[in-house]
Amino acid sequence: MIYTALVSLLTGRCVRECVAMTGEITLRGKEKVLAAQRAGIRDVLLPGRNLREFDDMTENAREQLNVHWIERVEDARDLGLAPDDRDTRGAATRETDTS
Image 1 (cartoon, rainbow, N blue to C red):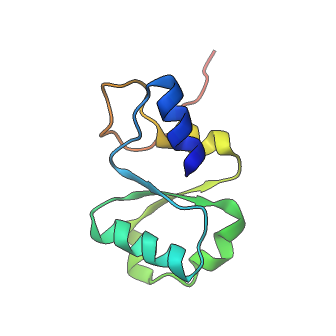
Image 2: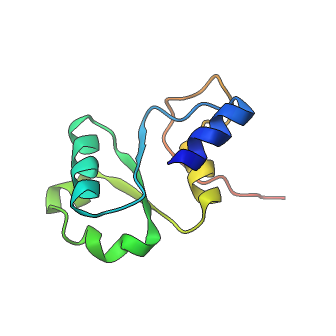
C-alpha cells in the first residue's frame, strides 16, 4: 500500500519483511495472496471490505495464512511497519496500550 510506503519513508520505520499486503481481493489480488503464500509469507494485510471474497481462496491458503483485516489505514501502518529500523523480521502483531 502506498500509504505504508510513505509512512515508512517519512518516519524511517522499515516495512516488515514477513508481511504482504494488497488493497484488493479481485482476481489479481487473489493471485498476490497466493504468491505471498508460495514465498513463505504468513501475515497478509487485506481490506476488511473484501472479507467475503476470502472465502473463495483455497482452503490451504486460508489455513496457512494469518490474515489481518484492515479497516483503517492506521491498521496497515501499525501491522505493516516494524517498531523501529532495527527489526523488520518479526510477525505482525497489534500492540495494545496497557496503561
